[in-house]
Amino acid sequence: MSIRNLDDLLAEGVSGRRVLVRADLNVPLDKQTGEITDDGRIRAVLPTLSALVEAGVKVVVCSHLGRPKGAPDPQFSLRPVAGRLGELLGAPVHFAEDTVGDSARSTVEGLADGQVALLENLRFNKGETSKDDAERGAFADQLAAFGDAYVDDAFGAVHRKHASVHDVPARLPHVAGRLVLREVEVLGKLTGDPERPYVVVLGGSKVSDKLAVIEALLPKVDRLLIGGGMCFTFLKAQGHEVGTSLLEEDMVETCRNLLERSGGKIMLPVDVVAADAFAPDAAHDTVPADGIPSHRLGLDIGPETVAGFAAALSQAKTIFWNGPMGVFEMAAFANGTRGVAEAITKADAFSVVGGGDSAAAVRALGLDESSFGHISTGGGASLEYLEGKTLPGIAALEN
Ligand code: 3PG
Ligand code: MG
Image (cartoon, rainbow, N blue to C red; front, side, top):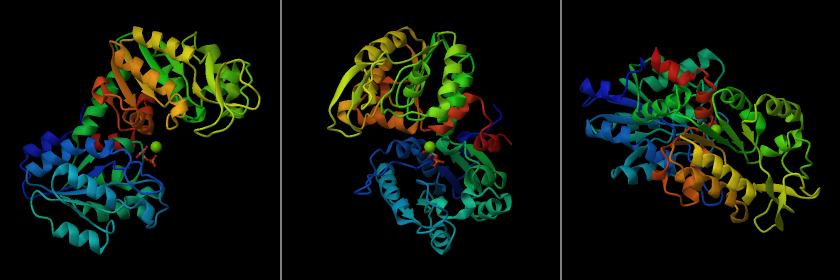
């Protein structure tokens, strides 16, 4: 691979230089308290940031959080992230109240060697996500002024053609950070020549989001296990009634077509946990997948399905998992996700967990992160990588 990485930059002798690091610090926040509910993405960039700090670099970190609409919006402030990052680094992180304004400039200018600053949310500026090259470019010019070099460690955002991901590296000497390097190495193994059987588990709510990856993976995998909200559109395509479960009516035909072409590789639930309502205390029962009552909605895969999926996973040598099997945030509907996750940890396979939600599920369910081969910080990014798409952030590093 023709991408330079952090070691190449460090080898140049960087003490006293300013380095702009694009991180993906887009962490989930508690809606009520605003507290960080999962700091996995913050921890994931520590190796890069610590290496720069130790090398005596003035480190300027930037990131997005959530999807603000191109203007400041306090609920999406990165301030709490600066606090947590400082705790994890063991040194205060200087927080800039804006992204490229007066506060950012004075914060960056005030940095001593080995100190870290975090700029406010990149998406408070229209230029970050603009489709207009000139508008993005103008914002990228301002950002690029904060560094003598650029490190991309925001794997979760490499699929976005955004100023900080795609346009800044065109303006500064650029390298991949430790996280991006590792993610690309691991996912590259899956797209290359994975050890077989190669079993992929997909969940999450929408089939339409996963269609492209299903198409791309079908010829490569030995088995494709489908659970989560998206399974109901497939069950409907099999001719079953799904009650009030999540259903993408306009995808039924596509799913039927995929099932026909899958050569039996696709495994669907044979039972589901069906509830009266989308609520943690809703009345619920396990029912056969072809017997979902008309007034009920499926919120998890059932135990027989878990056993079947686990049997398939136990044979695997390579596993990729993206998307929860049910509404794991509610205890009553967490067993499917837990069961599949446990089966993955027990398999004698190289396992990759892709995605914000599945990674968060691993931690929320108290599973041992080290029993997985790799937990990706990218949701959309890891799926698009597996689809074989050109990722704007990676392409920018290759140039
Ligand atoms: C993510 O959470 O998937 C990444 O941080 C990218 O965020 P986005 O989907 O809002 O671009
Ligand atoms: Mg996303």
